[in-house]
Image (cartoon, rainbow, N blue to C red; front, side):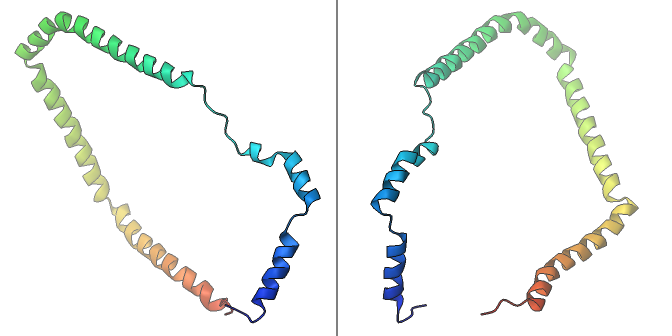
Length: 140
């Protein structure tokens, strides 16, 4: 919205908000900008993280190279005995039980009462902001 006296108002506003020399000197002594400056991280920290990650990778590779020859006969024995089938059957039984539990929860009678209640709450939430705007209209 533009008014005929916008230029006069802008000039008055600028003159009121302009700082004089004393105010600028006072603000300079406060050193306000240092409060928002973050402390710089030491330059050695990224180097330390690099060396730490390199040491972790080297330790993992070393452990793997040592453990594989020791565990290979055990893994072959487990494969011959059918341990993979046992683990797969255990995993499938756990998943089947979890599915049955979810199905039992979904078909429980108390869930039947919750869905209409949720629908009513949703409708009330949809209507709520509109009722506020009708009673307290914003003046234009």
